[in-house]
Length: 621
Image (cartoon, rainbow, N blue to C red; front, side, top):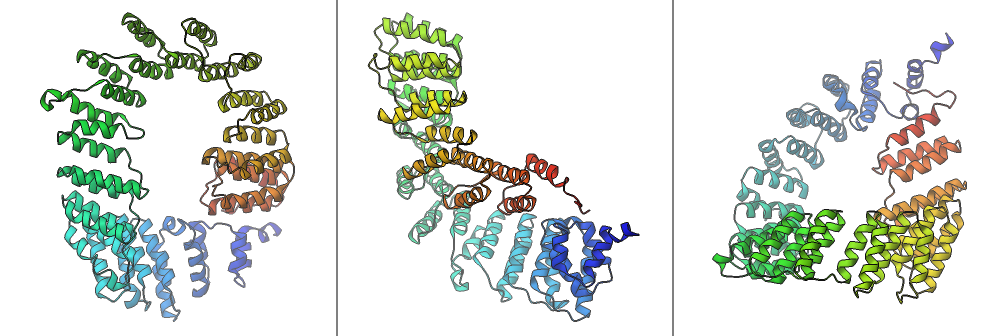
């Protein structure tokens, strides 16, 4: 009998007599579709049923999974009969449920019945929800019809309403109808935004109406509307299609002046336009200015020069060098070799610079047999290696762990009159540290001074990280002081390694001191190492039992424009569980989810393993 009294279902009845939704929410963190249906079957008054219905509807996916639409409709009609005033927010939940369940037509039907059947007035909010559902379902004609119903029915229109219908009309190739709505937006108190303009510009360019698209782009720029790279690209593509290369070039300059960085597509379209208009030399000139050129861009220029007989132009050493370099960067090493052969067949003799570009690319991927062939080819042509070429070979050997061969190559390099520089020694230091030969690395470091070579940040960071990997953080700190003494400032690589090592060893105070020193110097790390640094500090704080300080640092992340990640919350949740602060751990989990950070398998393992040990723990159905 006692067991029956304490059962979950009897507990529900206790909470519902008298009904206390607030207490029920605490009792059930989440409510399942089956629980919703069983609640609504209880002999509750309509008002209480609606409260439960609204609460469940606010939980993502619950009512859509239940698909109890008949029960919803009966509940609505019953409430109407009993004179209960229904609110728009309830119908928003119902329409969303229909949409999530794949019944967009039913969503529109509910919208029509609101006033006629249930006496509830709808606003633009409900209509906009319905428009979004119809667009998602691909019901384009229904979207247009519903919008015009809003337009003529006195419903307040918003910029969102206009942007949705314009997008749909453009998808249906009714571009004129979409454009005709733009002038009337202001009459309805709606200001066109970037999405509205982007939609129309893209559609106009697609239909080769570049003159009208350019006019809208000018309008965007005049009113200070933000223009993204895709919108610029649409217009540039349209201009190039009609051979208006001068205007396209001017537009690229304008987008750069406005802080909008051209991408590979921008340059690709422009270079292709130049090539098609016979302006191959201009294409080559522009290619040399493109940051991070890729194979597509280089192939565009190659295509132009391979037609040199028709165009009457001949590529030179500079042309071939930038093409080979671009292909190598894109990983197209076979194509780069082919271009080198083409270069020789056109009586354009490759020199040490051309071969060094190739050797560097092949070294980075460890293709040593092919490197031997290239070196033999150079030797037959009487080309001697220079310091840059040797450095490429030494770096490649060290990265592959061939330290002995790298050292032999440095001896040969010296004998041939090529003096090793800091890049040469940094490559060797990296290889020694990677190969766990720290003593040899320090011997090499000490010999730099006698060789007249000045160490730089890369030199020190390689050795600092090697020491940290061996757990010798005190030696690493001493070397960092020496680094500063010799005029090399600690950078983010140095700081991250030292801070993480200090936190790992529980030296949180020293880590915090170093972290503050880094911040005072204005060193802003990139996002990934940035959050790694913060995670290390938070873990160190928790390890020392400074939970409150760790939470304060979590709050500080938002002010530093740093986004915490799943690892951040896993660290905090784990330490709070270890400290038996399970309520705080649960709050942290909810905070993570509400911030859009989803738990992973490790998170759930932490929670389950700790919570199931709690006496009286019960998981609801």
